[in-house]
Image (cartoon, rainbow, N blue to C red; front, side, top):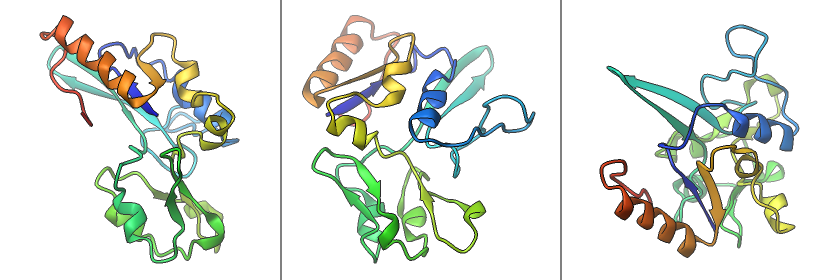
Length: 181
C-alpha cells in the first residue's frame, strides 16, 4: 500500500495534521500563539506537519512525515529492535524495546523520528506509524480521510504510482517528479 501526496492540490489547511493528532490521542501542539493547532515541525506531539515554502511569488506546501521507506535506515540503526517494519509496510516504534539511544534519529535521512523530551526518564520516540492499527482493520490513514482537496490518496502502490504517472503525463508543466517511483 502507498500514499500519494500531490503538492499542487494541497491548500495548507492542516486537516491532515489535526486528524493525525486526534487518531493518535496526542495533545494539541499550539506552536507559537498558544491557541491554535500550529506546529512548526515534527515533534513529540506532531507526527505529520504541513510546511509552507515561499520563493518570490510562488507558494507551496509540503507534508512532512515518516516516509515508511522500503529499506528504512532507522530500523537498521536501532540496536534494540525498537523500530520495525510491519508486513503492511509501516515503520513502527515498539516502546518496550526502546533504550533511548536515539540512533534512529541520526540514521533517518528525512529527520523524522523525534525524541519526546517531556516524558522525563522514560525514552519515547514519536513518529508517524502510517496508522498501522487503522490499516489493519481495512481503514485508510487518518490524514488521508481528512484531506478535503484530494491532495492525499491511499491505495495499492501500483495504482497510486499509476495515478501519479497519469497526472504527470497529463500536465507536465504542473508536475516534475514522482518521488519513490
